[in-house]
Image 1 (cartoon, rainbow, N blue to C red):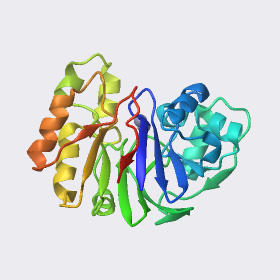
Image 2 (cartoon, rainbow, N blue to C red; image 1 turned 60 degrees about the vertical axis):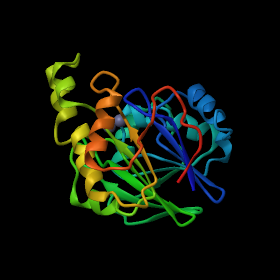
Image 3 (cartoon, rainbow, N blue to C red; image 1 turned 180 degrees about the vertical axis):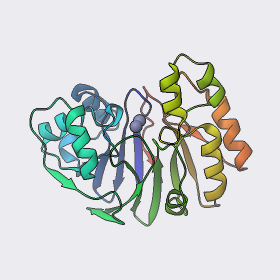
Image 4 (spheres, helix red, strand yellow; image 1 turned 30 degrees about the vertical axis):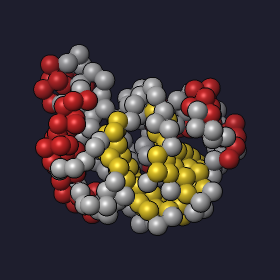
Length: 255
Ligand SMILES: [Zn+2]
Ligand SMILES: [Zn+2]
């Protein structure tokens, strides 16, 4: 199994996951032209995507989903709540082909990939994150959650690679440019994970088989890479975190 982060952050998210000939795009928060060019950067053709899977209806995850799906006839997988919210966030007039699943579903099968949805506390209708299984490997993806729940901890054990939200540093958020209401939203129980919250989660689920850690959904205004890295190094030893960037594709990464 391998994956490529095509962009990560509040200005757009998309990640490509591949196992044994099945390619799934997780979220598409970019306009059609932009996602076409980001896919081309890893030599992926939109028409060959097996599915687009959507975590929740915020624009940075869903803005380009309907256009891409309709243009290339790709199925969209989402929770019913997410799709209800998404129809407001997307500008496409018609609906793509949908495969709706309750966010509490234990396992979904898309070709050679098995997806385990994880319901998360985030200010959307029915948000979830995922563990992807394929080729005997496990990739955990956790962004856009305000709190770490027992279900999240349980689901992310035994991952071989992990994309983990390190959204903000609370002090930079407090003194940063966001209005007070947005600060409260981002730092609240249904917002985004701080460096310290992410580090505490990492300490609980870390094991010797976790070979790759990608710090994701990092705020450009309210965080700094060195603070996120210091938090991770304080939580576990012997880990070399990488960053998922907003404007640069990660290239293919093995799980
Ligand atoms: Zn987001
Ligand atoms: Zn969100």
